[in-house]
Image 1: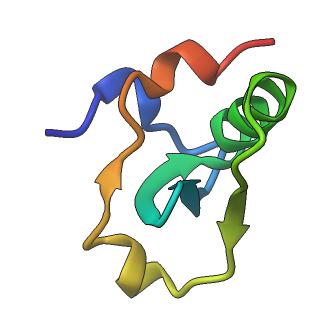
Image 2: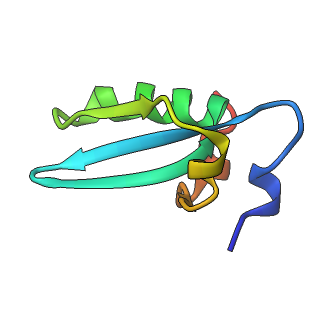
Length: 74
């Protein structure tokens, strides 16, 4: 289920990939939330997280980043 607070016309969605060991988790998130997530993640984890260049159609099949609204602000 999409979080209504995480959706808005001002910011496009991006494909966010988070790796934990050998497992990759793929999510859809607003660009600003993904940027804040990556900043926070890099401070506390050594595993990679990245934004993937993807088509809008492919993004539709991804789940939204859990708790995305926490990363919408600084």
